[in-house]
Image 1 (tube, rainbow, N blue to C red):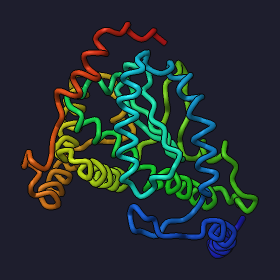
Image 2: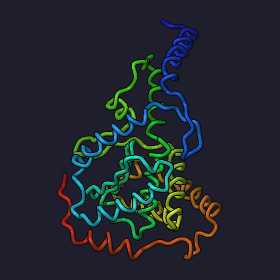
Image 3: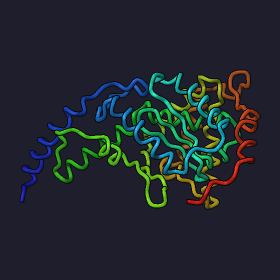
Image 4: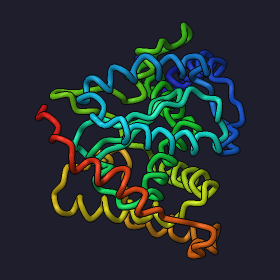
Length: 288
């Protein structure tokens, strides 16, 4: 049996193997130093490989080319003003009534039909997409992978000197499809959520959308959750009253003129025409 000193020395040796694999760099979106567990090529590979699988497993894309084009066009505009405009961005509308939105490394962003049905204006959709783009540009999945590797190494004495392949990375980042085709994604930390919130605000306001729309989304989802609705988004993106208060405070401080209609818009009619009116004409998704 190892003594405490021996265990400490073993841990130091393991860290000496892990840390060189995760040389740090400064993230352009957040300005913070970040370990590089995945190369840009690996992130692109994971996104490109897994996105089609998830689309199929989650019921396929919504049977409306016009809605898919509408969401893609808005997503492309938001991605273009992010810190990674040249990433291979793709935006998918999954034909699932579960209320959810998520993103994979490499710029693959998903929003469900159920989420679209809860929104009332284009600014809210910009907030949702901007938030998910923020998770990608901030490389939060990379952070999660690093944390998992560190905990695993410390607890089980495992080294990763041989590197990490894409399948291992996806598993350790907590992304997969469970029984019944339901997406399983581990919840982000409070810090990651606030960071993605602020990045989403940055991107949506650059396009002239009212930032308070992001708070509107949180309030709607929180209310729906209270009514017993199945909202997977809240399982992976926790919404607490404190988070809503912090975001509202941040908006009032950073965007004091957010109520000025000459600067910021909600684009309610555009959303109703291009999304809500069209969804009402579509057949209900098949039960899983």
